[in-house]
Amino acid sequence: IFGSGVIHSKILENCKLGDSIGWAFGLGLERLAMPLFKIDDIRQFWSLDERFLSQYSDGKIREFAPYSKYPVCYKDISFWVKNESTFHEHDWMEMVRFVAQDLVEQVQLVDEFRSRKSDHLLSKCFRISYRHPDRTLTNDEVNRVQQAIIENSKNLFDLAVRG
Image (tube, rainbow, N blue to C red; front, side, top):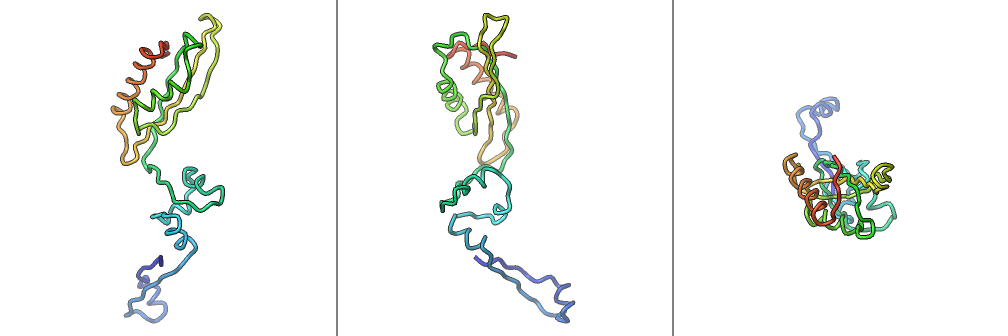
């Protein structure tokens, strides 16, 4: 739990210990917290990432839940809901998670409105956040999954995908 390292030679020279080798070490609260919370990277304590900060905002002691350090890829999907009585957002989101598996981090409704022209159909737009836990996703991978979601939206939910 001690952080340590070799003292820079310039510091030793300034102290008239130029031929010496020295070690520096220290114990901070972060080092004590690391084994308690099972955090393996001390840099996370200075992170402003909400995925880290939100795990401890309630002040309770709990094991750190790792998250991907790889970039997120956002894709939107917009569609007209032809039959509101049979469309349920929860079912559609469940299909998205089934198709995309662990590549989907979040599905969020970002817009909805009623058309003035198309028989007052309801339009919904969802933002899908794709992120792999272990590597950067390629555009081709995300596009294939997005296309499968579009096809399932048409075939299973009878949605008119826009754009």
